[in-house]
Length: 499
Figure 1 (cartoon, rainbow, N blue to C red):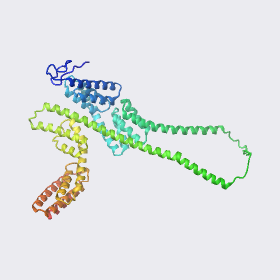
Figure 2 (cartoon, rainbow, N blue to C red; figure 1 turned 90 degrees about the horizontal axis):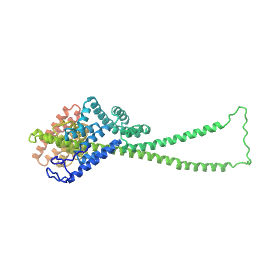
Figure 3 (cartoon, rainbow, N blue to C red; figure 1 turned 30 degrees about the horizontal axis):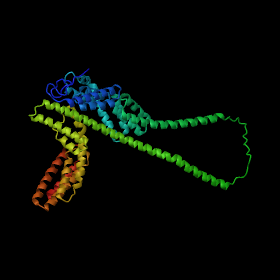
Figure 4 (cartoon, rainbow, N blue to C red; figure 1 turned 60 degrees about the vertical axis):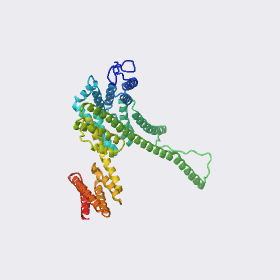
């Protein structure tokens, strides 16, 4: 089917000219971009037809990057994601496609099929959650728990490629290369040209071939020994064994033979060390090095996948925000707040991707409503817990440098950072030590200020008492918090009040 190219400005059908006959816009570059997008779409389609899903995803992503309105490419990208077990990413692509072209869009049919079966949709959601749990188990070195969880995931979602890959990697880590081969073969059956699966399979074959070679050697030895036994005739019980006579017989020099035997033993020992032990040690070190490299490659691949997922989510969120911008009346405060929340979440994800957790956490705190849409909720919940823990830890580390400083200015740096810990997920760090150091910093700052300026010291005292009282209330009402932190703060409040 031939799709007519339309003007990006007025949506009129374009002719062969390098300008639009309706609005006069120069479409020379635009035509080249659209053609390039279509070319990538055609190549992606060809890859998908031969089940090279990884190659198809790469080409289709390029296609929609050049022309985000390429509905065919976006819908096909969704189908490829769905075939790889990535239902959430597939649904995201179809939602964007539907927003770009609301009418006569096959993405509508795909989404209806998926939504018409709530049980299937819930199962998909559960498998993603279980996969994330398995991934956390793997990161925590709980490999057995991760394997059990992954098997459950793959029973309900057998096409989840990243699940098969993680399972294979865990088996390889444990040295079970025979078991690792099965999930890798399943991956290649779904995605025939998956580069990481091929790389892991080469490693598996390398180890399994080594074991097969050793097994064949042992088998050959047994065959030879059995053959020797068969060639020997059994004794009847009346046979006499007569030793063969030597043609030359003479008394041997026992002392000389002992020395020669010792020398031969030393030479044989050195030879065995050189030819057997050193190669075995070297092979063991190489195997260990290869496993470490494999582990690092896997971690890098996981991080790259996470980064790509976040980039996709940012693009989805930006498209959703663009749609909302056209629908909302920008004069209303509520509407402005909605757009502001989208801006804050996009900024937070960008900082999270750059490992800038403090800025990420600050932008997340600016969001007034974290339930704007399903995509909004998924993205918010995927980065908020980790960024709040990381931000609290960073503030704790920075505050610990200054809590015992010798000037009121440096002490203020410590106070600002330690107090900020309680704005994030402080329960995941050593918050009792944070409270102790914060109280000590307030008390020392007030003590130093008393020797310099009584008026300024009074201001420091008021700020210290107000802030520590507020933190005591916050800690006390938290059922999961240890009241020891509040007790430390109260001790320092009493000490400041007594001065």
